[in-house]
Length: 476
Image 1 (spheres, rainbow, N blue to C red):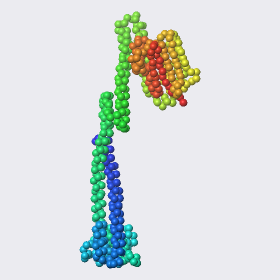
Image 2 (image 1 turned 180 degrees about the vertical axis):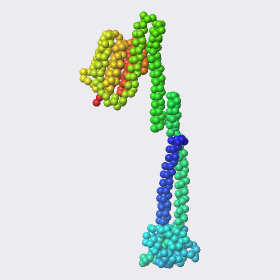
Image 3 (image 1 turned 120 degrees about the vertical axis):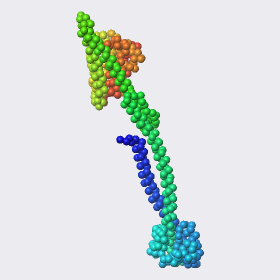
Image 4 (image 1 turned 90 degrees about the vertical axis):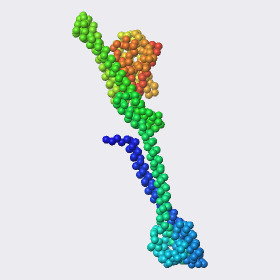
C-alpha cells in the first residue's frame, strides 16, 4: 500500500479548502463588482440624460429640439460621459443626435414610445435594450423627459445609451487584476504553508524513527524541538519524558533480572552443591545434619524471595479505583504490626515508645497494602536496632494528611547508601552481614505501595538514629 504522509494529506486538503474559498469569494466578488459597475454606469447614464433634458428644455425657448447648437452641446456632453445621446419629440421621432455626422442616420428614426415613456417616468432606471433595432446592438439605456420652460409640458425625450461591451471590458479588466493578485496570494500562501507544515510536523517523523529504534532495543534515541512554545513542543517533551521512563524501565528490568539471577544463583548453588556432596559421599555422613540444615535454610530463603516478588507483582497490579475507594484505620494497623513483631522485640530486649492516638484515624488505602508498609518498616527497625535500645513509633495529623514516623537506634546508614535504600535487592554491606535472611525487597515494596497511593516516604539517618516517615491522606 502506498504511503501517504500527514503533510501531503493536510497540504492537499488545505489546497482544496483554500481554492474552494477563493472560488466562492471570486464568484461573490465578481457578482458584486459587476453589479456595482453596472449600477454606477446606469447612474452616469441617467444623470447625463437628466442634464441633457434640462439643457434641451432651456434651449427650447429660442430654438427647436433639432437646433445645431443643441446638437453640438449634446455631442460634447456625450463624449465626456462616454454615452450616445438622442433627442426625440413626443411621438418618438429623433430630432437630434450626439453623432458629429450632419446627416446622421438616427435623425428621423422612430423610437418605441412605450419604452421611452416608461423609462422617462422613472429616470433613475436603466434598461438593457436595442430600442427595437434603433441601436444595432444592445445598450444600457436611460430616458428623461424634456419639459417646456413656460408650460411645463413634455415637449420631447432624451435617450442616453452606453455600450454593453465597454462596461463589460471595464469589469473584465478590473476582475483580471483581481485574479492576478489572488493567484500571487495563493502561490505565496501555499509555499509558506508547505514549509511551515513541514517544519511543524518534523518532530512526528523523528518520533516515528525513535519509536522504530525503541523497537530494535535502542533506548537512547530522543527527539529535538521540545523547546518549541507550541503543542508540538509539548508532544516532543512528553515523548522524551516517555523515552526516559522507558529507558529507566528497561535498565531496571535488566538490573532486576541480573539481581534475581544473582539472588537465586547463590542459594541454588549451595543447595545443589551440598545435595550432591551428600549423595556422592563427599560430605561425611556424620555431618549430614549440619549440611541438611543449610539446605533447609537456603530453601526457605528462596521461598521468601519468591513471596517478595509475588508481593511486588500484587502491588504493581493493584486496581487504582479500588485503592482510591479503600479505607483503613492507620492507628489500629500500626498497633497490629507492633504486636506481630512482639516475639522479636522481646528477644532483643527492645522498648517500644508509641505515640498513637486513641481515636481511630481513617485513611485512604487498602488494609493489606498499608499493613505491609507498616510491618516492613517496623521489621527493619527491629532487625537493625541495637539490643536493649528503643524503637519510637509516632502518628500525627497535619491538615488533610496523616504522618507515621518509625525511628530506631542503630548503625547510621551512609549518605551514599540513602539514595538507594528503596531500590530492588539493595542491601548495604553491613546489612548483608547482619541480615542473611533478607532479600532486599522489603523497602522497595514499601516505596511501591506508598507511590501507588500518591503519597511520599522519606528516610533520615544520622547520629546512630534512622527514621522513616510516610504520609497518607485522611479519608473524607
